[in-house]
Length: 160
View 1 (cartoon, rainbow, N blue to C red):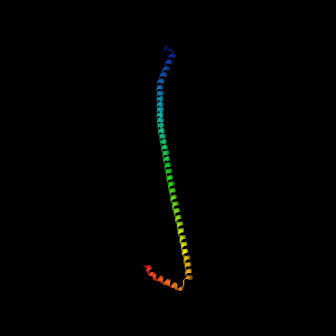
View 2: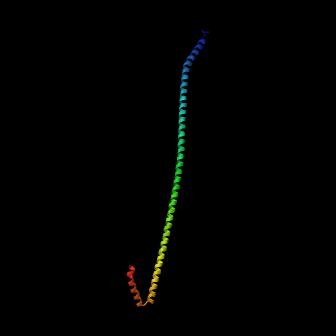
View 3: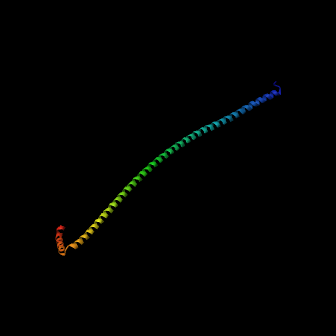
């Protein structure tokens, strides 16, 4: 058996396989270990990226929520301000209308007073004219002179 070439071919084949397997096993395990480490690193990087993405997503959601709240606050403030402006404008309009109404009433009262004065003045003028005419027709010259002299004598008493 040790003398047959098949035995020695078998022994050399087994030794060759053992040496190649030993060297190859080390290379294959080293390659697999490196590949495994690379995969672990990629998984760890992916986990970190996922955590960062989740943190960014949470931050953007918070910002969006804050922006929505700020928008609601701004809108509420704008509505309040618009209501205040509307109220102020209504009050200003009411004051203006009241003032104009009072001015119109004052103008009407003034026009009324002017009309009454004019009517009175006209009535006095008419009465004076009628009185002159009546006095001229009924008063004699002698009687007129007596009345004028009496009026002149009364002037100093009425002035003091």
